[in-house]
Image 1 (cartoon, rainbow, N blue to C red):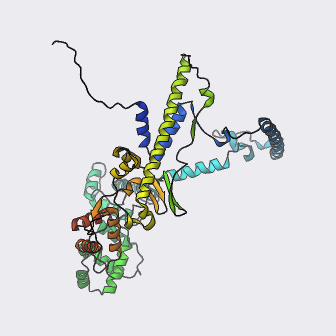
Image 2 (image 1 turned 90 degrees about the vertical axis):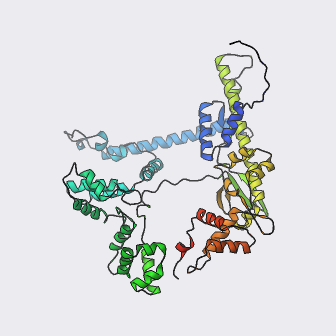
Image 3 (image 1 turned 135 degrees about the vertical axis):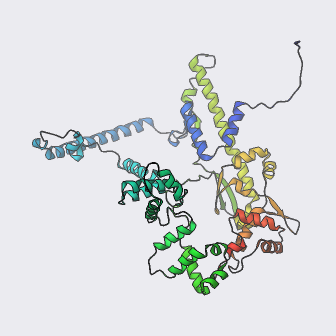
Length: 500
């Protein structure tokens, strides 16, 4: 192979470390940004939090402050000495030489014998907070609740092993995921039991709280809950019969056939259905809820003097500045290791502050343009939402669409109508009969409004909803209505049919 030299022309995009840091900070959420700022403060000694009491424009007489501090310190010292003397006297009065026994148990500790006032007193607020956190951080699952109730139940060792196997096979909704036959087959090599014994233990677990747990299907779950109702509950027997024999018709909403077979009037059928709707199809869903995740808004929007004002949340990030004491130690001509370390950290601190400023400035520009474009939404609600895409905001702020996508991801805006992610204000458009455009968010709001106002006896079909929207000047196909209805978690018309 012959070696040779060649010249080539080409274009290449090179991202500097400063640009990479700015892009990374731009796409971070509020919580991630706070964590990134804390890491920068811990790793860079040239960065510090700007406290109000240390601002340069606040001038305080140091001599007066020192004298005031000395006076306060002297008064607090006298008070503490007097308090200690009083406490020592009370301890001396409570203490008697013969109060300590000659022989003590092996596991006795010194704190158990001294008076309670001699123990070191901690901060009451801190102890309360720590106790509150320890009691509320651990979430109890459904399996833990069932095992706790099992410990209060008298069962043999064999039945307890069967019960634990059944509890382990129960999911978080309270439904049994394995069949009784499979559980019996899995326990047979260790225990000499029959299938009836497993069923008997299952019926015992089905009496635990919440009602309806450890059931094999929806029908059994509802029947177990009805069994725990008082015997004098109105229409209890009719509800049991309906679930036992007419579960398929009940699921499909064929109420006429149910009325004919059970010989019920319309009022009686409505009362039976109200009793069934009061039952919980997923009894374990409310046990062991996940920890609440709070959303911190990045931008606040409010109306002042007839104008919508956009402001950044001042609490999302602390005010940072460069430590002037360390920066003054840097010498230009010095190339020692310490001086190089300070120079590098000073440069990183400046880049970090510039990246934070660029992030806030970009977020402010994008949020202001969104509010300017969606002013009707803030005034009148979802039905007045205008169609908006990333390209529109990118042209308005003269940035790339990828930058707008990073800014609007996991960033939230606090408005008088609630807290919304910035992505919420972007939506596709649908043509109107007048030649204009309508936002898909506005169409979803109209569909939700039409469904809420429909007659429960004759719910609106997707075709009927499309016709009603066309009368309002919106050209929406039936399949588009069906897609939006599914996105809104609205069931079809046959499942929405109800009796008045």
